[in-house]
Length: 240
Image 1: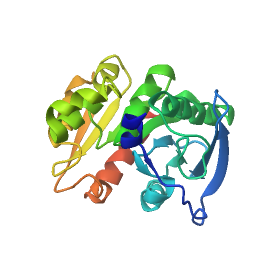
Image 2: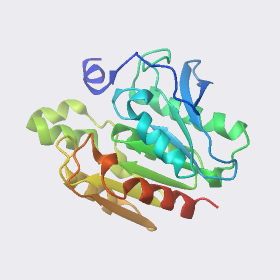
Image 3: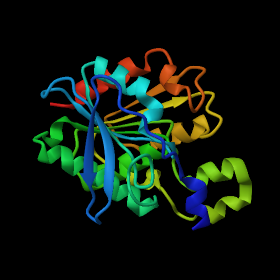
Image 4: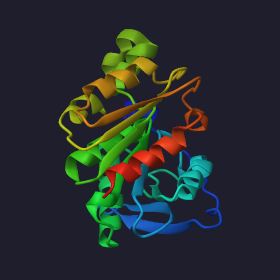
């Protein structure tokens, strides 16, 4: 559909993983093969299941993956169907299945739910919130994530936002979650307005934590002072 082609902006070019990062292949419930990178710190450490944004692929945040691993976290970053080396073409329901497959693959490797943290950036935050509704996890961490796709579209296109339908309704899903939630948002975000990040946080139940990334835009948010430290600290607090 046209709307999905506007939402998803995949990049197929994925270089070899950096030193210390391994490659994995994951199979979804509907038979799609996904490509993933894994950076391991220690078996007992929290594991972030990283769902990326709507553009690019896992290689676009290599520096962040390495920074999180350097903070003692395990990180499984996978590409949605149609992104990078993964097969298929993305859709809303498809990326939800992809997140579930990534989670299930990590559980089969012996990682318990109490050490798994659903972690997502932008659209990936919506995917992570949806994952936490279907799989048990220690916590949810979202960065630069919106309330609903329609709210983002309304900020940019006004009445045309109705064309987005009810896609990626994180606000309603988040209200029903009882796991700890960490929400971070750049206060200069030009893509997903800061107000939407605050609204998303307000919809969450306790325990929850908000991180205001001072001066950060949508694509440079992870460079905000203290954000990586805060994510790592929260993951260690939540994981038992």
